[in-house]
Image (cartoon, rainbow, N blue to C red; front, side):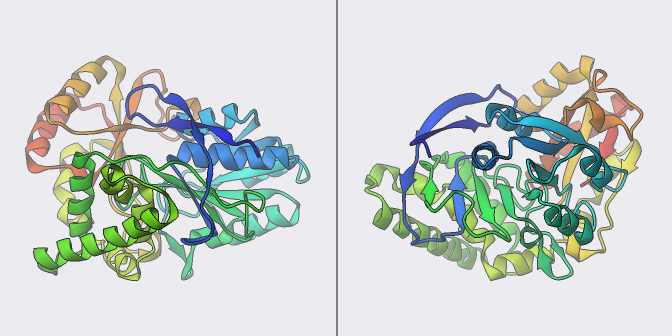
Length: 383
């Protein structure tokens, strides 16, 4: 494997920058079955290159996805075949079977908005026919089915801590082992961790506090810092880090990975249904038509509340100005042509955005009310 891989850094609404990061050996001190990277784009790229080098150069990918996924696959020189999703976000398995070859193809199986994307029988059938099935959990990490985490159903998995449904820290992705043990040959590799800004550190702290609303603030901060220094200690032992980078590495995606594997964190996440009720006013404000809602009573599929909505192209500049004025971050989402098939609108008429409800404040809601009262032709989808 080359000592450098091309890594794509997500820059929000800006174009992605392309950088080379030197891969370093770090042994098995932390976890030999999780491969931390600076972004989910890097994770997709890395697994795609690994499979291509293994003789699988064609990938079946969901047409209802974001540009970052397509960019990563194209950069890995993969041949792309597209499958669709039905109204319930289930993967169009028949199209994969009709067009695919289990000896030369692999499937990037998209778990959309907390849904597995089909039956376990379908995933197992593809595996039995020879397909390597990679679970794209960027939109669903943390969801369960029949008491099992989604990552246990796939050969490999890619995860994003950037568009995480629990909380986003702006950076980070991972390749997780599923049914197979070591996706990247026998080497344990990682990329230089991305440093976090002070603003992101504060965002993570307050997001973490949301999951501990019944505890006092001093306990929350103390527990948060304790977890952070556990990870910092790992970095200092495994790499010759300068003290200047001490805090930045502690707030890297590896720290978020540690939080995500905390039993208490998952128990709290499972109880987050109350957040839907807390933010019901958000739905009243922005829902206008074509609403798609999940079954929020099914805790197995519950992921933290997040909204995606579509803004008319001629209103995008005005909306961006509003977001900038309120210091709010919105991500681009699902700009492929086929993603609007169930909404009877075309990609050319609308631009898509998404945001976690954790990031919405009351002042912004007031302005949002003005925004959507004026522009009523808005289609809203609730993950």
